[in-house]
Image 1: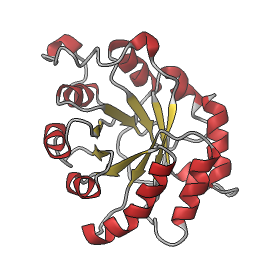
Image 2: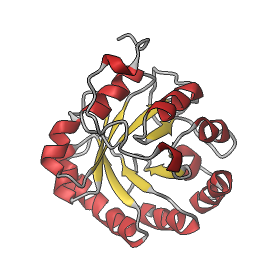
Image 3: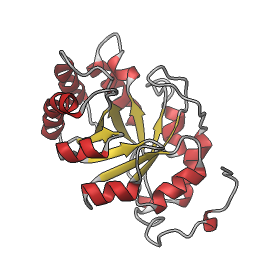
Length: 229
């Protein structure tokens, strides 16, 4: 799909580009993604992380698990997020998000359509879409009613297999033209986050840099908080 086109090439919903005031864009915030193993002492680790600094959203991301098991694991984590006023987002599964009454769902390419998610989850759900390094996919997601788009990976990551390499200039392009929030994802650490924040990311999505930190998730969140400040 060719990304070398002008925004006018798509017939956008008139409210899409103006859904947020570009000049009043809030400071970049932290979007925390779970590891795939969220059993055992993970609820305590999540509580420690959320206690250490502001987190805007937490994405529940587990793979190859039936909904009954996923629900049992998700519910205590969802309660912790509610305690800290952190949005609880389900990765990939519209049906699981519906079952949990989650705050929203994050869709990869092929995981469902934002319009379908809106019909199932209602007008208040937060719907995000992975757009890799593609301007076209991002604009299509915005046209379909997504609440945010996610670009990446920006750096090498071991959290998931990636085949797309995004550049910080993509964030600058998006935030210059559109108010719809964008999330930067992929290998982000406190040491490499600054260029993405300066490029215009509304959120930086982090996982391994928090859960694998040798000093623990709370220490990692504090370091990210310092960078975001």
